[in-house]
Image (cartoon, rainbow, N blue to C red; front, side):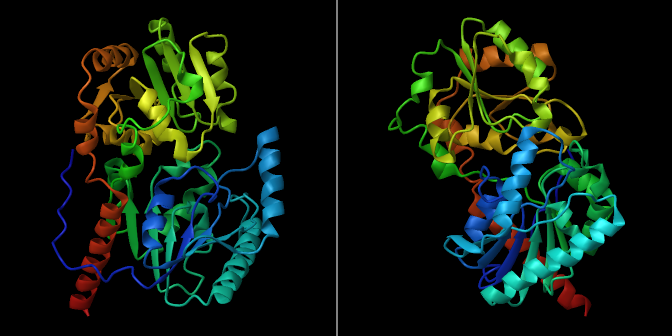
Length: 401
C-alpha cells in the first residue's frame, strides 16, 4: 500500500469550534453511520443543521420504495427540529432524476430555498458545508457557505442506480475547498479532481461496543438456545453482500448458527432469496444500535462477507471496527481497508474465507486485547485529524498570499 503522508503536529484545537455546520447526509433516523458519529462529536462545540437524505437513485416500483416516498413527502411538512443538543434536522424534498437537466435545475432552486430558510430561522452564519451525500453537489457552493468540504466515504457511482450522479459528484470534488476520503482506493481515484484530497479512515464508537466484553449484558433472547458456534453479521443486507458465501458458510457449519442482524435493502430482495430454506440461518431484522453490543457479545465470530467489486474495493466497512471494539474474532473477504487491521482475518476466496472462520473459532485471541488495540480509533480522534488537516491547509493558504 502507498504510505500516506504524516500530518505535521500542530495546534489545531481552535478549528471547527463555535461554527455553524451544514451536513448533507442520510436520514437521521437511519442506522448510525460515520456521518452520525462525526457530527455528534462536532455538535459538542458547534451547531449542526443535518439535512436528511436527498435520494441518490431513481425509486423502483417496490413497496419499500413507495413507503419511503410517502414518508419523505409526509416528513417534508414537519418543521426543523432539534433531535439532540445542537443537532437540528431538516427534511428536504427533491426528485431523484439526475440525468434530466430541467429536473436538476428545479431541484437546485427549490433545495436552496429550503436550506436557506432553515439557516435563517436558526440564525446560521459563517457556515461550513460538510457534504457526505454527492447528490447535494447540485446545491453545494450556492448556500452562502464560507467553506465547502466533501467527505466521500464510498464509490457512490458504483451503487445500483447511481450512475447519473457522476457529473454532479465530479464537479463537487473540483469545487470543494477540501476533500476527505475514507479509504486509500478512494484517495488514489479522487485526488485527480482536487489537490486538497486527504484520507481519514473510519473510527469506532469504542466505549459503546466495549460493553460487549464487560459481562453485564443479557444475551438476546433469540440467541440463547442457538447451536454453537454462532457466526454473526450486523449491518445492511444490501446487494454488495456475498449471499452465496453466506450460504456456503451456513452449509459448512451446519452444526452451528449463522445470525444476520439488519434490514434488507430493496436491491438485495431477490439475491437474498438464495438463503431461504437453510435451517441454520437466522435473520432477525434490524435491531436498535443500543442493542448491538449484546448481540456481538453472543457471537463466536463476526463476518464481513462483501462481494468483490468496484464499490466494495473502495469501502471501509464500519462494522469491522465495531466488531473489533467488541473484542470479536473477525473474518472478512479481501478488500483493502480490512488489511490494515491487525486482528481481522482475510479470506482471499470462498474456501479460504471458511478456513479463516475455522481458524478464528479454534484459536480466538483474548477479547479485551483485541478491543484495546482499536481503542485509539475513536471518532474524537478522527475529528482531531480533520481539524489538523484544516489548520494545515489554512497555514498553506496564508503563506501563499
